[in-house]
Length: 487
Image (tube, rainbow, N blue to C red; front, side, top):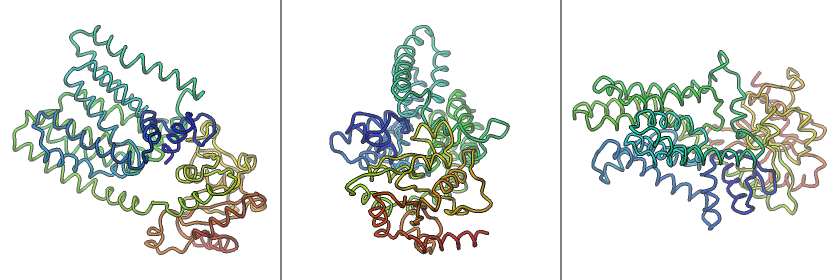
């Protein structure tokens, strides 16, 4: 939804901004995907359906590339079998929400095929496309292109092609975006690199998220290594070792369906495909059975959890509230940790306190005085369930390190009771609330703070009331009970 907001502003207003009329911002770092969706919007296509069609087409294209890499005759049954297998990973739900997971995977697989075939010109083009779709694609591209240059018979000629087709346009694009946004790096990169690390290197949570996929790769590639040996080794280095080291050093925000780690099962598929043609039939069957077993042991439960999350997190109530805000005669301002549905459907001026879309808070962590200074009509925070929407005696006056509990606490502290009124709405879908047997405003909830003297107060309160929002004094009672239960 964040990317769709950028795409809409580009299509309608010709500027890359988080909200209409806002400053240039690079919160949607998937530049080519944003531009592609903007083009679809420009000609009247719905972005949700468009992204779905492109993702499904990319899934089928991925199957074709894997068959081509394995030198296997292409048939409809084989294409559908591989596509279906690729869709049995949690990242498919990220694709279903509009992320360019599958186009990215297709471009990466195509790049490996072109490098394997030694097609320098097309590999350079695919590298440029991948980096435009994902700026972190460079961690895959540079090792692959480096290997291709080193192994080339005519290194000077190959380097000239890479320089002219990939390096020069990429450098020009980088220079343009620095000029356009006034930032050396995309805002999400600044936020994701602002994290506590073990030994100053590894973000523990990012490493933990990757472990099941690394174990999956170890399981399915062990038979390959025993039968054929893992060759070419550059594929292993370029698709597993280097990217994993990079992602371990980043805090992976918005890692829907573990989308940042889709390269790991994809790398296993690519390595198996490379060895497929030289592998005996019995060994091929071993690869497949080991893969099925590894999926059942390591991936099936994460897949189910993502399915359940996808089903729960439909945000229909939030969407309706945002649309009601959009229908108000005069728009206001929002500070919200939920930077997708609310800005997109309300059209209100929005500050993202986490910093992915607001430069000020990407460079420094938001503080309570910032909340007071901005004086937004409404502040929306989604706290962890252990946290509170009311200031607690044990809290500090403000928090400096960038963590989610510290973020929501700073917002709550900034929205002092004398200025703001607390409302609660249930997080996610009605199905989620009923499945957990929560009453409205209980359990997983959003804290809405309404500015008491805002000229838009009555309209906001009416929208919340219409869609099951819980206002004072009931909201205060629920939060006090929540604190008592947690303590």
